[in-house]
Image (tube, rainbow, N blue to C red; front, side, top):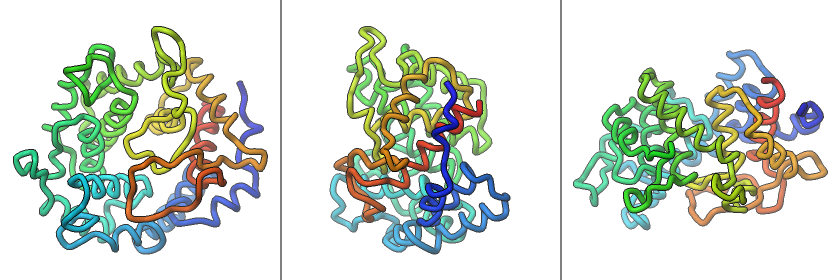
Amino acid sequence: MRLRDYGPRPAHLKWLLDADPAIRWQVMRDLTGEAPNAIAAERSRVATEGWGAQLLSLQSPAGNWGGPKEDRGLLLTFYTLVVLKDLGLDPASKEARKMIDRVDKRLVFKWHNNRPFLHGESEPCINGRILGLGSYFKEPNETLANQLLNEQLEDGGWNCEAPKSRRSSFHTTICVLEGLLEYERAGRKSAAVTKARKRAENYLLERRMFRSLRTGEVIDKHWLRFSFPTFWHYDVLRGLDYLRNAGMKPDSRIREAIETVIERRHQNGRWPLNLLHPERIPLEMETGVGKASRWNTLRALRVLRWHDCS
């Protein structure tokens, strides 16, 4: 299946580029192929302008977001860090170093024997993301990576409900996959980590990214609707964007998922925000449900380009 008709048109690129620096630099990298120095210059603005700068300014001296009475522990802080990574905040910038040093030195999981935040806790869905955050912003944590490898289930994925449930969860598996990929990119590539990632990628692919292996039915129709931020939630676009980011070669098992992405495109050529999850960060980005979403449009276009050019 060729998808060149679904590529970005000049009007759509102009719309995407008329946006926050976090969108612009990724459009320049993934869609318009600008020179590396131009991309880096645009990316550097994430720390000082727009959404990235706003989120950084809301961090307390104690290292967290949300204040001392933050609901449900450190979840608001956790999700804010994930979004800062998604924005592409340059980890080498002075602003990022100041931010992650506060997190590393001052935040602990009180309910987990005061374990330092970047050392993780008990649930693989949280720990996969923390492994990615630490690898991206600070340094890879080998102990946390090994903990995740030891928790991989027989079917290839992970589940926060294990050992009660021995069946993997798409939600947990995508969080761990993203973390392991970042861990490898931080210079900790190993045969064991690569093998674990390949097993988990195959878990998604065997199920065609959204279908039950046993019945062939759609596991959750919410996975066919796209959101940003994704928080801990899996959806088809997030799964495909991971495969693209990991440099996988597309095969026939993603054909239905790619068709789902195409079908979600509105007549104006843009992808809408299909839903918002109940989790939150201390910043409202971009758009309302049902309206054109630059985040979804950017991610959909780069997924389709990856599929078409491979």
